[in-house]
Length: 381
Image (cartoon, rainbow, N blue to C red):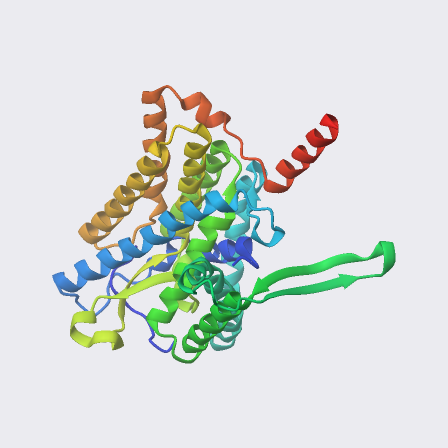
């Protein structure tokens, strides 16, 4: 979370893992560690509205992304299958994120900030259009009537011929998907031309929801490794160096949610934003989504671990805002979110006597599960 800071107003699925790298490269929270000495002094009403809106926007992608992750974990279509994070991936991720962050720092020191941000804008335009289109797709399916002429299409690229032919791209879509893509492209053009904070937030929410939905931890131990590593990463780069602050000031991309503290005074043209990095949403969010899938696996028609971790997230985020507002200094949000999101469910599991069962829970990737079903069918035959 950050202190009020002037941010220049001019300023999905296809690569879910790459998006998460980008989020943490500019830091899950470091985007907020910008400037505690901003000249703009927010009113109490403006501050409350900004932080309340950020908390609400953070909760939406976690809640709905977690629900969609349950359906995603059962997907048979290759294009809808999640990216599974293993313990090895989790252990390496803070190192990769640190190298990426420092690399961006050097890039901004050596090359022109204007050209780098132009390249990043084009890159995130493409990713944002795909992410927003994927996010809107289920909603469009409900809005359009059954009588709507929904034609099916398939984009297929192959290599070779005959028996050696292999698929490079095999993407199936329909007319509703095309409508989503058109709407998302309009938002993307708006973002490119105006860099308006609403367009930024639409892309940011789509990135966050897709991250929670499509990035799956294979077990609770992996989640603890990932959150623990990024806990250290977050604290070190925020408190230990100015690298994250420098990158955050220079980086123009929809990898953070923003809300103006001067909205009441200036309306939609407001430009003094409070911010929350998407990593502060996605990193705890994929752990919360894992606990929801664990709840489903118990088949007890209960969502105890999901709700306990969700409430823990609210508590941790609220504590971050309180400490930041009290000490007037930006805080690494994962410093508070990680202990809360891990600690609360563990206490609940201890109380219910299900701690061992929680840590034994192993999520099988859809392709492996399908292979097991095929092999069992062959044995039966």
